[in-house]
Length: 127
Image 1: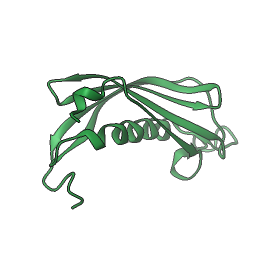
Image 2: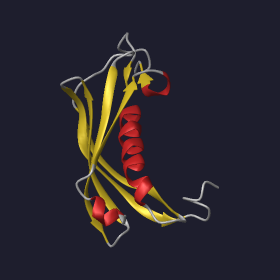
Image 3: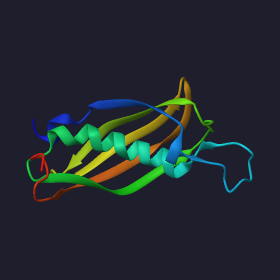
């Protein structure tokens, strides 16, 4: 099914705040928390996985714009959920997503993310 037919589709993925996702802001806060780059990485990853099954053979997506707010903290070990919804497809190649990270009912980050469909030899073929 073409990606344009997927407008409105959503995806969630749970993750634990640990490893490369955490920062202690150079030791200035005395705790390890979800970093903003880690949060954005999980948003992008989830949007990528939402689009991937609906791309044509030999194509993939790359992120080109992120506009998010990191509105609350999540400590190391927290169980969070990354959410994405495909809101718009332009010219079958520009994908606009609403994205969010939550810890339970608390919003940690919220915003928009855009990806572009590109041609990649071997993409979508398992090779």
